Length: 186
Figure 1 (tube, rainbow, N blue to C red):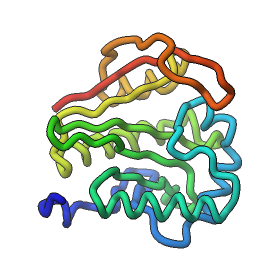
Figure 2: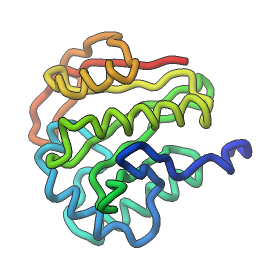
Figure 3: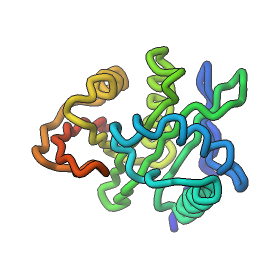
């Protein structure tokens, strides 16, 4: 445990969102977002949230993410629209290596909110959180080679392409896919 991280922010704000750590009993609300975006999540390879097939499983997921936050193993955020208070996305700093120090980032946004720049705001804020509060030196994004939207978003947030990883990931469908690695450093 890193005592200096006991007082980090658990809520981040952008112009249109509230990005915050999960709380108990939010699984039911979050499940609807996941269920509505199930096929997109599989395509985006946000694997830590699959498979979740019920509200109860989603509540267990929310509680695991909360526990991982408290244990400083990963930092998962739900993304809520600031005006409607509805859950519209998810992002997580995961696979944290405190020796390097570095982490991976994953994210998705509800299909009804994509293409509006909202997730760009969110990722910028989470990168800032990672670099300033967690004191990470590097944050990596692994994305499907054909996920041009995520690649554009990453570049807008200051990430640079570092390479292509051929036959790197198997989708739940069984298909093997190539992945692009992008990263931001301090």
